[in-house]
Image 1: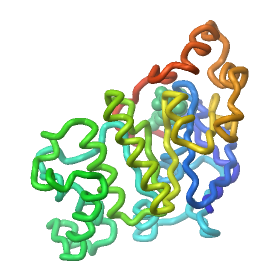
Image 2: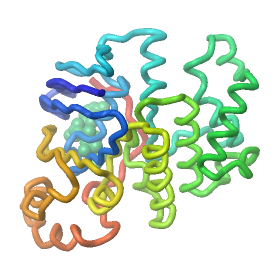
Image 3: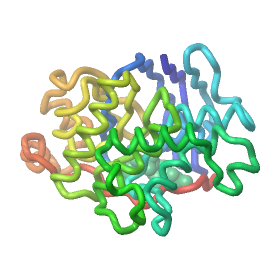
Length: 273
Ligand SMILES: Nc1ncnc2c1ncn2[C@@H]1O[C@H](COP(=O)(O)OP(=O)(O)OP(=O)(O)O)[C@@H](O)[C@H]1O
């Protein structure tokens, strides 16, 4: 189980995540929603330890991860693989090599420097590409694929890390509806079939409702709602997204298909404070 206790992150004066506590059971698919700037992305980056908390603790299966360093930290990051809106692939490299890069955390320093991978790693990468229906594209340059295909390559790259948790930071924000649905179905299949816990930041509420059994809504850095999708009434939605002139819009958006409630993201940021 992933347990987050009183986690807080400040960037200078900005309180991005404010005393958040959550328990995520193994195998859950959790949609994280909220307005732009609510702290969704910061929360995922804290879990993955791309950034360090200002206060609070995170543990996984009883192991405290907030103080991990060196190889242990690399292995933790591999076991909670992260995918981003902008795919984070090396576009000039072929698809198979991009997927193999997911194995780097498990390798020795020298092998990873020269991108030397074992037969076993290659077999893993091939299986992961089969899983996301992209084996025929294995030798194609990643940059020549569609956005949806690139995101599925990123999912395959995450899978070869052998993750226990998959963190997806607005994975469909830059995709058209058909590609977005394919990516969400792929995440759902991995969650159901492999039992991998999935935490996904989404900027459309109905996507969260369709694919996630549990929804965590953030507002101003805090958890404002945590429950089953069916419990998320329109009144709660209005609270989550605020009522500053958005009521009519929100009512309409709750029943619509793909209208963003927070802005599409820029590429992953690095720590600034
Ligand atoms: N590296 C950083 N340096 C300074 N401030 C940051 C940094 N990362 C996030 N913030 C701030 O922290 C707050 C929460 O940002 P975060 O990206 O987590 O929100 P979000 O809910 O993911 O928003 P969006 O849906 O727009 O991506 C915002 O006010 C943001 O400007």
